[in-house]
Image 1 (cartoon, rainbow, N blue to C red):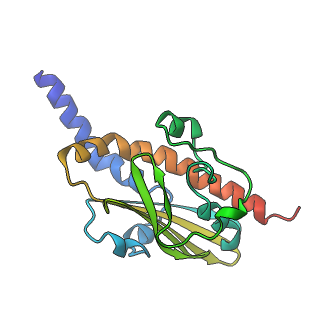
Image 2 (tube, rainbow, N blue to C red):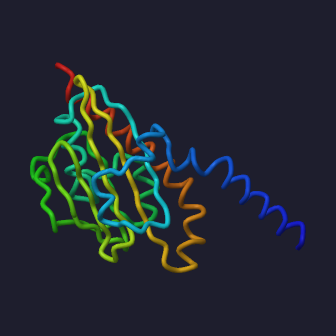
Length: 199
């Protein structure tokens, strides 16, 4: 038993010292990870922050439609591993086309990610889309920064973990969220670049 506890303690230390920062900051520059971004004001006191990013060879106008329609069916999905999302009962069906009926998100509207009911808290087309959970413990913001025809898409998750079970549950969630969010950001990149390319 003592060896098992020692092994678990050592694994936790290695994760915290060597792996956690790259997992929580995939694709983001040091400046982006340290920056105060639009949407941060929606959850000032966060127990954890994940900032992930990708450069998209397309203008923000080609990126925004995929963010605007993000969500479970009949919305556009999450552009990630649908089969994993659907094992959790999230009804995700990632589409490869722009859905006109979901292109005008409004503050206060929203949808559910399983038990998490999300509402738009900040909407600035082609610049910022921020969602907040009904309990106020999770804010997910997307920031678009366009430069010379390409767009930096920055995803920021801020979360509060009020209970011990939330803190324990976050241990496997951090690396798991990287797998899913990396696929999502790359999925948006592929779709936006295709939308922007001349036929």
